[in-house]
Image 1 (cartoon, rainbow, N blue to C red):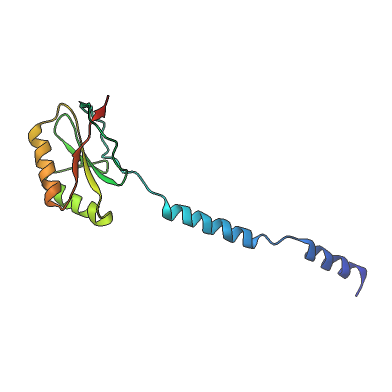
Image 2 (cartoon, rainbow, N blue to C red):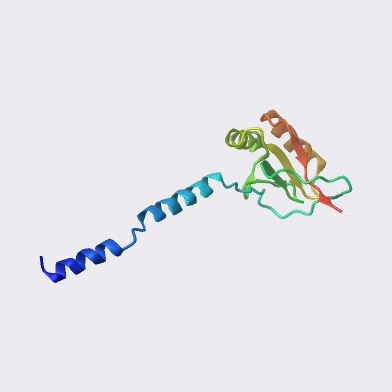
Amino acid sequence: MNDNDFLMNEEDENQIDLTPMLDVVFIMLIFFIVTSTFVKESGVDVTRPQAETSVVSESNSVHIGITATNEVFMDKRQVDKRAIRANVEKSLAENPGAAVIIVADQDSNTNTLIQVMDQARLAGATSVSVASEGK
């Protein structure tokens, strides 16, 4: 063995192995991604009516939006009134026990609101609420 071989072995032994630390960081990243919750909105901007008794709802819910022109939106896409039930069933299958919150514009038809509520209940939703703006 010459002096150069001795110096190379000493340098190899003094280096810090970062592999275990990177493993821990990646495991933590995966854990946070899996346990995080994502908020789904109806996808339309509506003017909600004012209410004195409004209550903040849970984030674990299915949102259905009704515009002033009585168009229905779910997950940022327009949905036909006849397809609301199927879409709510799909959302409830992905998120069992979730509440359905209807975000209706103050200028929308009551008839449209009732139709959407009926379809949500027929889809199996146990809790159907109408969103309002608190004072």
